[in-house]
Length: 451
Image 1: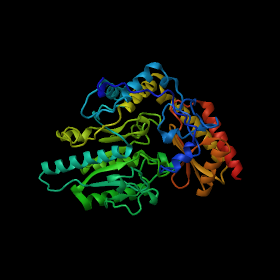
Image 2 (image 1 turned 60 degrees about the vertical axis):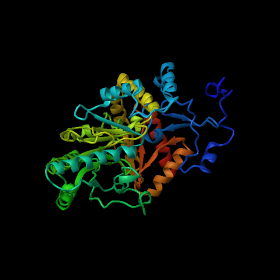
Image 3 (image 1 turned 90 degrees about the vertical axis):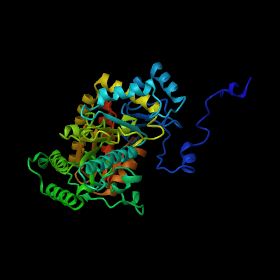
Image 4 (image 1 turned 60 degrees about the horizontal axis):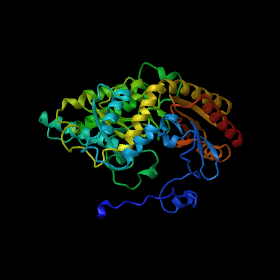
């Protein structure tokens, strides 16, 4: 028997992962911010997560930083047919931009059917939300430079208009846009791109004001000034419909629509960064509920596969970066295994009507958080949310940090920090009422402990 046909000896059993504590082993070798939890991938139910070491159960409102849209142990992800498809796709890692597979074709078709936007027919897939945003920017740079050349303007589209307190990633171009925690960008080289104020509005009467608010006028004036200063160099305006990392900060539709209109006037593309907000706010995309029409949408997290949707004014340039060979690409073009999982998740979302379900569950969760704010006004305030993207703020940032630890260690309930002083919840689309009520009850006990 020749070497290439020798039988590979199969392992007789799965290695015992409990032989050494995975948390300590990883902390000694791998950079990260590990909780003292080892997730049991074979157990779990909805929002319930189990520690494989001792069976401790946690009520999980983090969902792996909002990347598990069906929660833990959803039966739709446990069928023999799906598991066989996963194994088949995981045996190899093809370069998806160069080699077609039925799995990628099925994913693209399912994506377009369940969450696609007719006006954004162009798709690009890649690993990582940061790289999704970065390639959206590259599409805009390419588009604006070609548009300038067509008009006889010898200027490259090389600048990005963006907002304060934004998070768009931590590598390449996105480093110049992220401005939340200074530690995440300190001392790294960055571009001096125009940044304007971010006039987030707390829930209340001001949200429905028909006219622009004074702080929104200031931000819009700053955008006009940047466009006057840099002119044809500005390629795009990038925004998060809700600023997640910045503190679950909500921007009013009236303001974003005004910036969008200004960008059209100056031939500047608009880029909605929906890496965090996609499939979370009660619709496929948060910008849809705000009445916005972006030219590019970056996606990731709950979609499992990251990438960019493009269209609208991008299509005005026939040889745009989506269509010009090798203008944007990567070796893998996303993971085929992720595409198989994403296809199944989207099918479950569609079959079970989970966007509608998440809207009603979001109303329940927000109501519970508002009751909590009324009960503990000295500790928390500004309960807010859209769909299942909910948060509440603490008057004292130190209390927020203590609350996260007490909820986790004493009441076995997991939340995430948001911005300098807020606590965020990111339940799965399939969350049940009892899970959400129990989570807020644990938070209520936590606040009582703080007092």
